[in-house]
Amino acid sequence: MTKRTYWAEHAWLDDTVEPGVALDVADGRITAVHKETPAPPPGAEVLRGLTLPGLANAHSHAFHRALRGTVQIGSGTFWTWRDLMYRFADRLTPDTYHALARAVYAEMALAGITAVGEFHYVHHAPGGTPYADPNAMGEALIEAAVAAGIRITLLDTAYFSAGFGQPPNTHQLRFSDGTADAWAERCSLLKERDHARIGAAIHSVRAVPADQLATVARWAAERGAPLHVHLSEQTAENDACHAAHGRTPTRLLADHGVLGPRTTGVHNTHLTDEDIALLGGTGTGTCMCPTTERDLADGIGPAVALQAAGSPLSLGSDSHAVIDLFEEARAMELNERLRTRTRGHWTAAALLRAASADGHAALGRPEAGTLETGAPADFTTIALDTVRTAGPLPRLGAETAVFAATGADVRHTVVAGRHVVRDGAHTLVPDVPSALAGAIQALRG
Image (cartoon, rainbow, N blue to C red; front, top):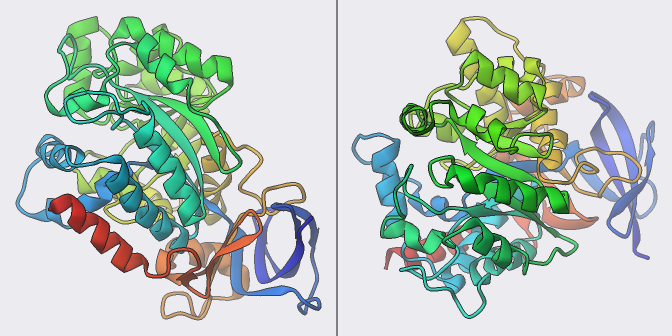
């Protein structure tokens, strides 16, 4: 049994900041929490600054990181952005995807993220031919997370059509297993391991025919696995769903048994009052991705109303316009301030919970996201003496983290009791910027 003690100068416990906290760790879990420990115990690892539970990035498309900057040239809409995204998806192989995802997940660790939900739909070779290992692409992502030192929930995604009643287009052929039964057969070959959980996803109601939604939902239910779905990100999708089925995407999902407490709708942007009531009443979660939603000009979703109705909130960096859960948390609040012209829709503590405990729960890890005895020893420390964080009283650390800090202020990230980031440097990927640049250049050719 590997034992060690971490001493946090300040730690966020039970929604408050406590000075001098010692965390005993053994076999990847917190075995004891000692408050009122003014000095580091002998041999303890010292964490100067504010230590938080590890952050959960509940929605990621790792290969979208290659688009950063490129997609800011010119104007357009979500749909023109998607055309460029497809061109990068066409170039992925298991090897290039592993290299890129390893670098992207290392960037996440540097930003204090200890677990990622990877919404994975690039399954096969271009043209749709399966690899010799039908899960070669998913395995590349799982192994990339190992190499970067973070946990992953692989949300293997069902994707069978280009739109209601339309076959996959040329780009989408490699996303498709043809039917939900074939998708389920392939997914069943994936195996969980210590750092990796297997979940499911429905890409969207336009990508999975209505008569196949229940098959995906049943596969997830039989395994107690998380189930995620892009939901009402675009008004065009809502209009097409009404034309095809005479109802909203949310109602369509409800009618086919998709909604429920293990399900998370991603974006949930353009909803009716009935949609909000359905999501909240079933306990279906909402993953907001504010930096992507504003980058793609999607709109501002009704997060306040959703949470009030009973939908737990989590956060994701989605297309990775930036990778920074502090920015996602404050963007959710600041978006509401712009929309309503009032302040204070969430406390800093509530926003941190969305970025940590509630995000981990959405990824099938309800035991994670707290600094408590028995929880995974996953935590991150932000400096309180940078140009962004210096000045406020330490007891205002949660407010400082959410409304001033960035991922650049992360000094340490610990996963399963092991330093993955120490003093701002990744311990497993020595030069993350070079790894990112090399992986992206390989895709550009």
